[in-house]
Image 1 (tube, rainbow, N blue to C red):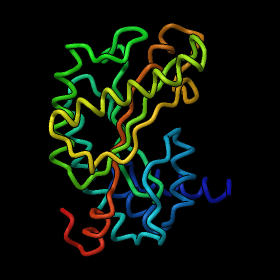
Image 2: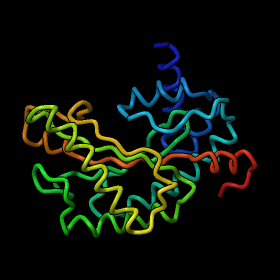
Image 3: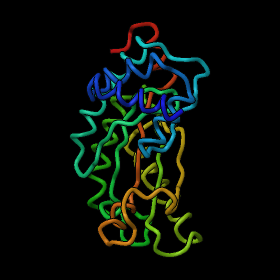
Length: 221
């Protein structure tokens, strides 16, 4: 497994860092197992239901090219940190992270006024890309107990979901809304700066079955 992972990562470096190249590489390898492995290495939450069959290189390339466009749109959203991710099918997707300090007051799951402008912008991105499925995850730092942090992270994810739906995002698009408490830190919880990074809401945009079908048919733009 380690050999396979190193070979895959090396191939990605040689191919370049855009989604088109990585979509081709991953699509050629295909399958839910590989997608899960790559996602775990990258520190990403696994998203997307496995389609059951390996996705071909051509399909992966078209989805990668499409996700380059999605990523560019998301990068225009104020206060959003945007990254490439890999879904459970080994296909490229987009992760958008909002610092909870931008969205909520301390220990609160009520969206503050300033956050709504960013989420309104983001809602437009989601509506313009209705062929993307969405997963929303809330996170906390490790201050306090799981009894507090776990439900707080869920409520924060739900608050973002509710606001996005209020801005016209289809509930059909949103496939998963959950909280992970303090179990998935991205920074050092021993520092104030690290804890701030760990208090966040992540929104994942990844290929729906309709997008995969369009890519397989060669009609995905």
